[in-house]
Structures are given as C-alpha cells and as structure tokens.
Image 1 (cartoon, rainbow, N blue to C red):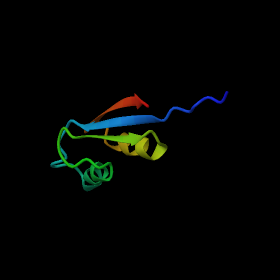
Image 2: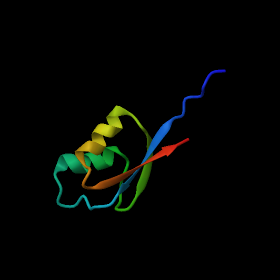
Image 3: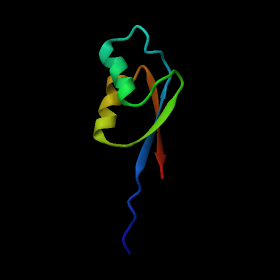
Image 4: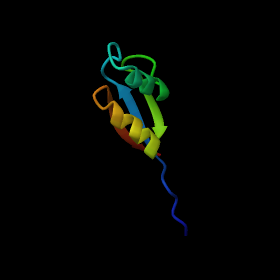
Length: 67
C-alpha cells in the first residue's frame, strides 16, 4: 500500500501594520495575498513561501495546517 503524502499548508496572519514599512516588505505582504491587517491566507508549505515569511517575521504569524 502506498502512503498518501500529506500536503502541509501554512496559515499566515498579518499581526502588525505595513504602514511605514519598507516598500519591499509591503510588496511581500501583497505577494502573499494579504490586503488588510488581521487577514489570514493559506498557502502550501514551499521554500518560496517560507522565504517570503522569513523577510517579514515581525509582521506576520504562521501556523502549520495538515490536510
């Protein structure tokens, strides 16, 4: 029997405002799909998404979800 590979997902929530931040940081929030404060988005756990999160850890919280 083959094991099903579980797709790990990340729930990313903005907890600090992007106002007054560097343009690159605001662009990273936008690239993640976050438009407002306290908004949450779900993405697959990929190196690209992890890299974006690493650039703005002070603005977001991350929670792992297994589906």
